[in-house]
Image (cartoon, rainbow, N blue to C red; front, side, top):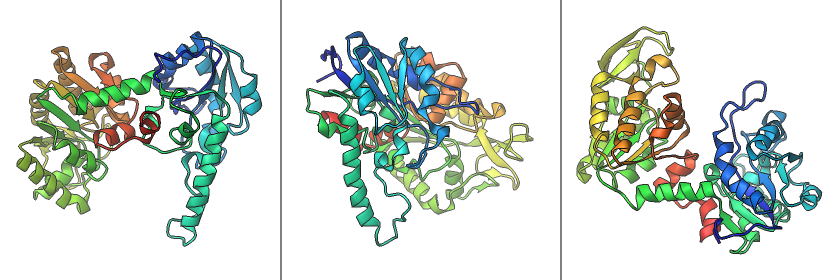
Length: 415
């Protein structure tokens, strides 16, 4: 069953969305991208005469009720986005009566799923090293099934539309699907678009294929880097991980971020790239600062010869030229992770050069996929979101999909 072939008339439909939106200190939404992304799926259900039950998590309350992470704060915003009043259930596991009372065209938003540890299915208050941990884990898995069964009991149909959490086997993203047959569960529009975008990158590669991997640590990206080495023509590694590679090759990196225990991993990546014929693009110069702040003193210096007391904060002018050269003629482009501390206005140059080169290549017909919170924040900060092919809502889920891993949230519906 697909969302397009389904008719939701007189059906109660429970939809897992990702409304984990950023809030300011007054509980006001600062970026409603995720809410807007879910609207097509939610409106399709309402427009066809279905009753809608929306569920999501927010933040990391670790299985405990925390008003700071209450979805009650966004009820008005969801109502505004859908154009209908939204009811609120203050306890997601005790909403049976409210769900049963819903009429066609009405909407119920459940409280934060993660107020219950059963959502994530991890034992609380016990360390993995504790001898009793395995028994606690088994007990929690049983409780997770019951929690999922409760959520499923509210509705006739289940729609998974939260790509950002699709890589987690949580009660609401995967386990709940066991309680619906194949004609009563499906992916939402956002999930379909995300899965298609990943397929474009992995299964329908137009060459040259350039991937840009940024971020501070090699350790968090090594899986995807190694996977990409078997697929790409050009691999740009930038951001903080630049300095781990520079140090691994015998360079001097001053106070720059550097994973000393990953120097051998960095050398292994260089070796693999050479063996596979991949053009590995590493920084040759950087904009260094004498402190980690927007207003610090700066100098441009080689990435492998940074003076003591200075740290690399952005890609330098020669490095930016190398990045642009590897991007401009690409036909498939993946960008995950900035080239510098883009949050500081004085250190956006490297990331902006990447964004502009991607926009130009896209205008010439390339397929460009931007994924991961920081890259998305970059493209939005530069006002260029409409100049790329696709912006993914999922950071971890996107990376795991590209790494070749199966996503539980997709498998639960499609396999």
